[in-house]
Length: 531
Image (cartoon, rainbow, N blue to C red):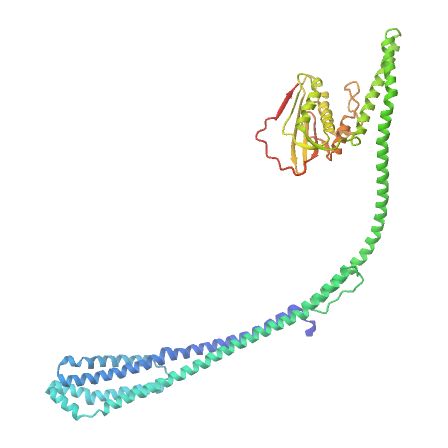
């Protein structure tokens, strides 16, 4: 594989590997140099300097010994030998210390130390010991005479040997210091070389990333932006690393696929727009038809009122005037006609009320449902009787038309009173709770209930679940309720999870800006009215 075919990861790995080898070699060399530097510093600080100081101490020890001998020769007292004895002790300790600091390769210093020891022994044998022995045997005057007659050549030779040893120690110290300086300079050079390697590797990495990543990515992004701007036929390629070239190929494949699918989408969009136009036209036609139908229902019901009133009036007149004058069958026919006219009047009135919902409006206002329920309870007081119980609690204030909302509750509660169980006092409870942006209002009773199979049928206009002679009404009440709820932006449904009676739920929008309600302090009813 040629270098051009290397992936970006392979090139970075090769660069890091080469850099690691160079830095590793510099690290090994630096460790070796540091070890040498430490040994050289140890020679300077822990060997040469202490040995030089010991040489000075040794010279002082011999001077103290000579001073002690002369003092003893003058006084003859034993305490005058104290400097001599302390000098001997210092001599032995200092020589031992110097020998302990010497290495095997310190041959010259060791030879100089041997010379010092030999000349010290000579001075003791020729001068110091004979003077002490003479003073002890013959007295101080004999000792002084011996010193005067003697020569200082042995002591001078001893001090010369010490100076020679000190010179050798100074040579060792200078040599170690020079080597330490050289190793320090070598360490600095290693650090500079390491910095150069790191900087070179960083520069190479930046150059590598610029040539293989940064500039190719910028070029690739420009091509992608051109495609995103609408040039779907533009070929996408990259001259960067093999990874980017592969990515560019994948992106170009995606471009080709999108371009092909876009052509299909454009064709489908044209079809959808045509269908939408057809649906819009049909919706407008349906809206117009519904509007015409509502207008027809309103006009028909309104215009039928007058002739129907006449028919009903004359039928009732016939019934009052000729009741009992004709045979029983004629009275029955007249009764049928009167009943039919009255039922037709009720149907037309209900149809008129149904068609007016949303057409004749006084505008939405804030409506307190507690106040509405009080009015509804008052209207239904006569129908409820003395044993009925209508109660409600925690009802909200909503936005709507109060007359329509009153009609809504009159129909719901009226149905609860109508479809009561025999010999069971009717109980109707109205409650509400908030669900997000809606109020869910529940009207529940203990009546005969509604079977689940009729859950949708009960809200259809003129649909009855019972025979006409069993329960009065036209079957439009719940249809009116549904239309009122939907006119206020809500929905209505039958709750099928109750075991007894009927439970109807419907929703009304929450007032804009209304805060979340706080939980009720107790489950007691806010207000209860017994009729």
